[in-house]
Image 1 (tube, helix red, strand yellow):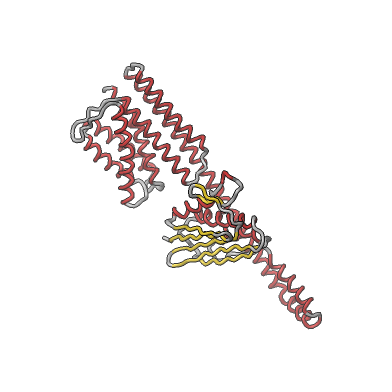
Image 2 (tube, rainbow, N blue to C red):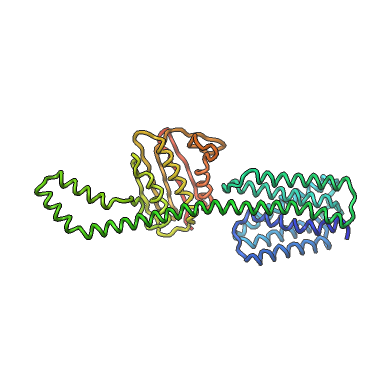
Length: 424
């Protein structure tokens, strides 16, 4: 085999992994087993090699590759239209890089219907490195959009390594001559470094993603524990009152007739305080919603705030507990934080209802009237510059994941968030 053919065989291994990463940008949920997915990509690699060694007509390669991309997309859950669109978009993105590199390496006349005579080993490696760089950048942008807190240092490092290895390969290739074995070692080394960096970044991403989910899970578990504690206290108080109700009634009767209203009122107050405990703000029988609200709103108990809670939702919702925790947790946290900075008469209103196949959420509160906006993101606090607007952005992402809509309204006194979440 020629050096170009050897380069193609080796670089196609990395090219197949790049295609896998590209498709994963668009499809998050796998519908086939891991073995079936792996087998499909291995099959793609060998089919691609077979086509390369038998047919080198660009138009044929284009049609076959788009078809293969679509077949690979069948591994993932999505609509047929999205699979077709994203398969074509993935192919176009990678093809544009290939066309650019082919042109930069001096091959301008591409015979669409004829036989391709392109034979630049340098071009092949450049295509793979630039493709890896593109996938890395797109993956980073997706992580930023999903608020996965991967430090900038890590993803800037991955881009730097790709660019540096690109420069090194061009320098080696243009200033030296290599036999086939040396060429193979050089190609594997350069592409292997990029592959290792990309793989390490994926590992870091999974680690930071797991950390984020763990924090939310702990918050949700705390809410469940608080809900159980409230329910247990309410049950204990109710059992105590039932046990002593006859005695209380006798005392109340005597106080009412003998001591007058003052002693009567004092005694009633004692009974009320004995059953007060932690307040049960939401009792919709939806464990997720009740747990989050009853946990978060305990912070308002000792605040001079007029609280209105109106919750009426089904026991079970198609919205994941993960997303519901993000939405209700962040909205109530933001509202309570804003209320702590206010003086005078303040209120907090939380209304959640079910209407025509959708969940309607409205959280409104008074605030100090200070709202800043940066790049389309609302900044409701002058403190903690690093986390400005992250809560509302997390809420918006969770709403979008459920094909919902979010609208924010505010004036100089009231801040309100309205959310519509359609149920499947």
